[in-house]
Image (tube, helix red, strand yellow):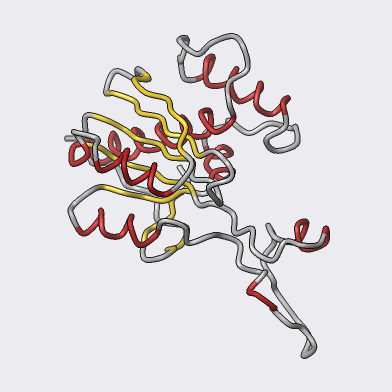
Length: 204
């Protein structure tokens, strides 16, 4: 039985903050923290004393390679469905997700740690935590923070605006708790959306 539920919002690189949130079985937030490098992530997970009694959900970070033009940045979230003979995928710029940390996460799975990956915005939609505002804008951040307090009862969240990395990590922790509760209740688990670096990616 899992006693802790860890959500990790993994950023695309060390220059942006990653968020980590830990929930207990009473739906209490016992930890919120920022991480930056993969060494920080490894240090946190390797030193978490109850890792084998935890369910972990890790977000898929965007792959920001070759984003040196506005049209590339805008096209990144979309899947290519057709191309001409002249199409050149220079630097693999159509790759949507980064494999950052994938090798380390696979070694944890080999040790028996429960890890799933999730696509953040699909999970927010599944939990009715999405908003009509631009992603990661101050208005979107405030809407998500309010929704977490009202819908999921996280009344300990402060009234001032929290870092978006923390809020997105809480979404991952909620997903981890939901997975564990469904398993304990023998409910049918939603089929993975796809597999990324040999780890199933789920939505909610």
